Length: 82
Image 1: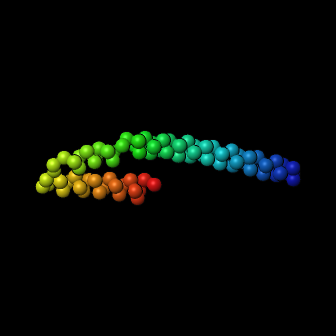
Image 2: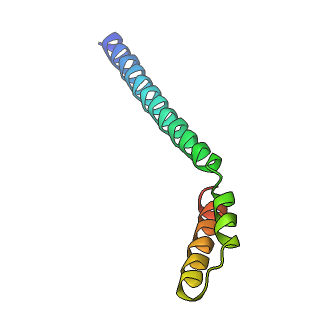
Image 3: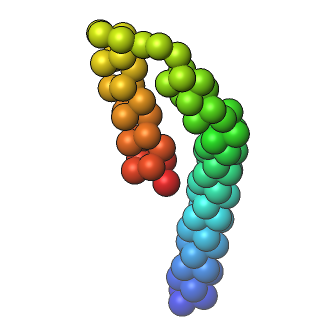
């Protein structure tokens, strides 16, 4: 009777270990995919595009909208993405 309980506990520990390993591997895959997406986003050189738009002669509501979107972009890049 004791041997059956020991075998059951060992099987339970093995099952939990396998499940935890599976979820860890799955989470690592998701993290790697998100890291690759972030790297691609950074490589798009949005800063250069923003600088080019800044060099144009914007005025009035267009300039105001551009400045708001520019500030929002820099907030995202500097505060939320890292």
